[in-house]
Length: 245
Picture 1 (cartoon, rainbow, N blue to C red):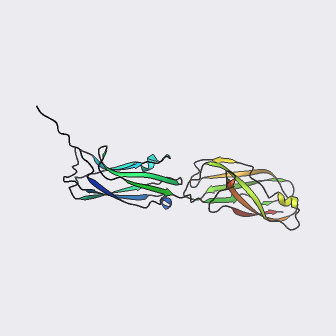
Picture 2 (cartoon, rainbow, N blue to C red; picture 1 turned 90 degrees about the vertical axis):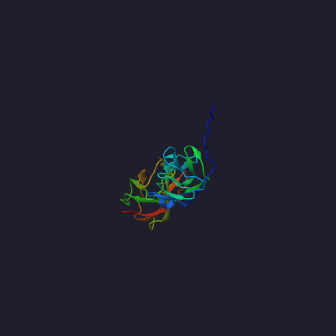
Picture 3 (cartoon, one colour; picture 1 turned 120 degrees about the horizontal axis):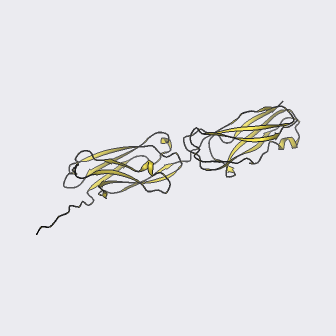
């Protein structure tokens, strides 16, 4: 009568991970993760019948599996007491947040090393480009104020409701208080933006703006708002001089 002996590996490898947890400045490029595996077993990790691999497993709650879930297989036998280095070039997500990733060395589906957990962070380093298509108008009557908005940074903006707020900084000499109040505009045109990635542009139009009769320069601060609050980003707010001729 014969018995079958099944070979089972325990925790026989040790891994070390060398990388920066701050991915902010890697957005739009590559972020290097270096993993070194040491074979602490009394035998070799033989490539052929078995598959040995370093595994990156995304453990967060946002949709980033396609970015972080990655496997790099051992290509040649790793002798006892020897080490092997694996390099991953990850293209970071474009959304700000913290991304939890577990890193291990596996034999098939079995983890045979320590598990290293890294929390990669992408800071909300937003950047806005605000321009006005037209800043000179004839006095009296009505006109449209069209403000162009662009994502000039590397990080995608949060999904939400965006609008513009106008605040008068300096009025034309001799203008009335009623004319000055026309440039003090609370958010009224709301745009819903999602997946507003690097380089994406849109505009917000204030139609039928009642122009002052008093000629001169009106200095106005234009703020991009998100959910009714100032969108914290470089380049926001921005001042414009509207000239009434």
